[in-house]
Amino acid sequence: MLQDIRDNAQGTIAKIIIAVLIVSLSIWGMDAIVGGFRGEPEVATVNGEEITEREYRRMVQINTQQQLRQMENPDPTLLDEDQIRKDVLESMIQAEVLAQEAGDQGLALNNASVDQLIVGMSQFQVGGEFSQQRFTSFVSNLGMSPTEFRELLKRDYISNQIRTAVVRGGIAPAESARRLLAIQGQSRDFRLLRLDGDSVADQVDVTESDVEQWYEENQSQFMQPESVDVEYLVLSLDDVMDDVDVPEDEVRQRFDQMTDQLAGEERRSAHILIEDGDNARERIETVQQRLEEGADFADLAREFSDDPLSAEQGGDLGYLMEGDLGGDYDEALFSLEEGGVAGPVETDYGTHFIKLLDIRQGDAPDFEEQAPEIREQLAQRRAGEGFSRQRTELADLAFSSEDLEYPAEQFDLELQTRSGVTREINQAPFDHAGLIRQLFSGDVLEDGFNTELIDVSQTTAVVARVTEHHPQKPRPLAEVAGQIRDRLERERTLELLQEDALSILSQLRNGETAPEGEGWTSYDDMVRDQADLARPVLSEVFSLPAPGEDAFTFGSAEVGSDMVVIALSGVSDGEVDENSEEVKNMSQFLAQMNGQQEYQAYVQTLRNQAEVERP
Image (cartoon, rainbow, N blue to C red; front, side, top):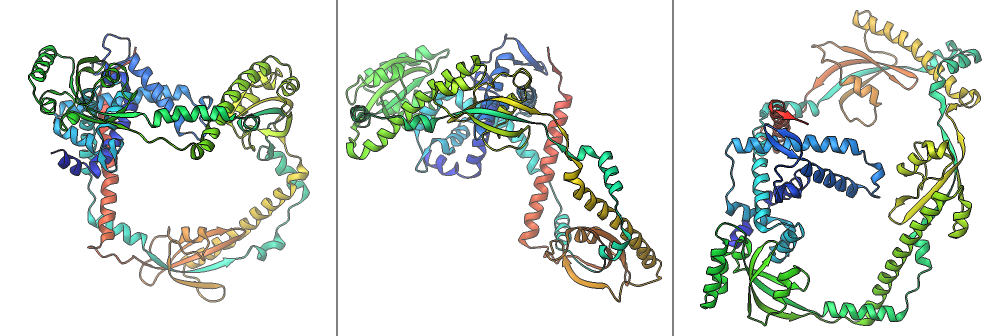
């Protein structure tokens, strides 16, 4: 049975549940799963159901941690805490609305299906097979019992069924897909007449006065950004690492400790879990009596255990080392002789009966092979401790110092300088937003204090001070006069060419002239991504309406300092086989997009109709 569950759990359903688990932990928070916490202060009620303050705080914490994990160099100062709190509360309200809707629709999931989901989750697999040991450790680390974990998956999977049903309900006619593919594959025939900017160059005259006037009227376009000159100190883990020396006796001592651990014994155990409940005491006594009567432990696990996944395997949890589960379970397990049974053993997750199935020893490592890695680990640990200690001391000293010269002397650090540090784009270490925010704060910029010691990466900390402040100001005219002249010349050139283009277009549309002869170039069967034509021309060509038979549609486009007159003569849709895989894939894509839009509208409707109150 368990193997069938494993086989059926691969693929889509396993992928879905991974996303479901992440959503569960981030949207609801662990406290909401384990507790319930009614009677606590609430931050909102949704149709009479409370979202408690404790749930809310827990989810804000989880959301904050997630955003930090997504950063290459996690820095809490870069987070918008107000926005996080706002987004968190709205997500919790929406999640509650969806959960209530699932309940109203009578959606349900039986226990066997929940087990199938768990067995199919990659987090609990080793070598493609479900590992009871990994599952048990994972759930224990979450501070949950197996039953609580199963209920979490059940509730969120049920809510997800609503989304799946709506999205899958999206439709898109095959004709829409065929038509879209035909348009995408469209080709066009047209003719171009290029009006060269050089042809009117003798009519363009930009004077110094014109440049000066434009500069005075548009100085905001040529502003030098506000900047500061700074001096700063860098404390690096690498520098601390260079001074670390690890004695040979410490390497040997650490190796001996590792040997004790790696060569230590592993114990394979089975358990029967009785969770707290109305008849828990009676079930515990029944199991204890039947064990004393010689009943088979595995059979009792299948009959009585509240851990359904291990129960399927006779309660087998696999091999564990001392400390894997900890507490009273470990103490009982490692006091048994092989084949012995302990219990009842009370833990935070319920009452256990434990059987020791097997004992095995690990292999001892070789010192010469392990010594370099051990030495490196010890050096890193010692450097990390030294870096942390020096970081704290430097932060305190820099805070109390009027400048950075004394801290530099005390820590033997180079006092470095940097000019022209702006609020926007800078080179390291001033590419760190938190450090820039401090440099341009009132305390540092105006009052002359040092910044705080900022961790610009996990191994580098920087403290800085402003030595010179350069307010924003216009760049001198001499620096930008050339740019202004080029701009004015181009604008005036295009104005003259546009007049010529409008005259030509008027003649073409009135039939006074035809798009042929000198200067006109023909292009046939051109597609949207034609590489040898300017993008503005292609954009205009494929924006023009299709011409009638033996007729043209006209337009124009700017290309640099030139103008191009366009005469569109033909439009041919791309050839599409209605029964092709391409049409099928496009139909599915359009249907999915429509389904997503319908789901968003559906959720928004539920949200709008919900009675939400906030204290």
